[in-house]
Image 1 (cartoon, rainbow, N blue to C red):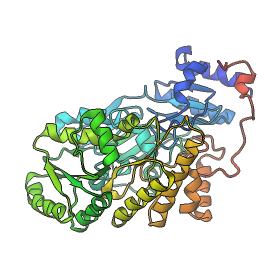
Image 2: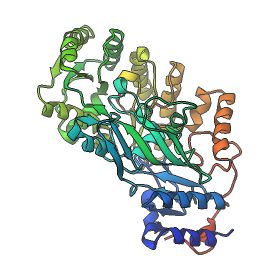
Image 3: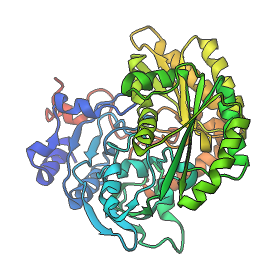
Image 4: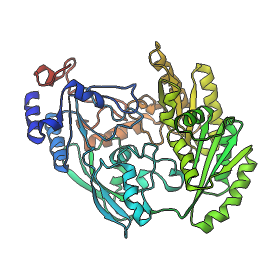
Length: 482
């Protein structure tokens, strides 16, 4: 079967305006939020129906052409960088709310719906969708599923996997399956849990059944300033060890606070080396009972300045600064890498002190902002890609941080995924037998490895289905390189 046949088959599924093959049309799809990695797909399709997605996946399976499903492209690990010469299914137009059941606290959505949109719809019934990644106003539920996204409040409420009840998906061979359903109580193997966090290796989600929660009655949001990053890290261990379970605990260092102040006028303290944001939430009586204990612990931890949000507007300002931190660092550096390693909460202080040493060793600035409650570090490694070998040195520094996380009993990723960037460190965390087992599971679903090929797992004998040099569609004169 020729490349021309493949394109003709695509034209039967998509009108010309939803089948993109020109260079200028493909550029926006070459990379994701980690712009250091780029690859040019052979084409991009813009499906508007589930059937179009199914037909496209079946076509790719027949032609053994690699494909990747993509949402808003906010991945920070290269997870939604296309396979060179493969096909991208851009799913943003599959953005319908298919069913909303306030009584049973369920929303059934298509994968292209925006994360924040779900909570906006449910707000009238005092419900919301708990996972709240910083990119919530733009990222899609499909992308959240691919990487098992969390967010600031994952300490208390968990990750995407804790809030997805069921998934309708098309597997890489075109078979449509239903995993899970409407109930919290499942039976048999947890295929829903296996699909979530698989980074697209098991196919494409078509419908997602989300669990909604009642909005907390009250919030108590506290900012605590410290004269060292290590003290702020140790404060987290102190709070968690006390038995309190805040809705969120976040830490920002001096660099990230400066960036947020410049970007959104967050009003963070100008002289602190680190800041801890702790938020209690829930029934009014419960929060009122927990306040004194929390403030006692913060004082005990060595905070020299404590501020409590006095209004919803003030709370919103605090969180706007925190959630804008990643993009705000762009004001301080032309390029940066966001890492995503995890350490045990008891090792946070030590990990932060080690990051400072690594930063000094390389002479590269590192901003720290992270989900302190579950030990999920987000060091932002700043560099200037215009300088020779700057990216290579930044990646080397990032690798040292990941290896440090592993040595402390942690992980190379908490919610950003492995993608392209972290594949080299999989072998540092897992043994060869573990990796082989993961690969065998993947190939049991996708023997040709056409679904998001090259991501998450180290490459080892994957079929070389694409020719080297010019892509088959280009050789056939079907696509152009402008």
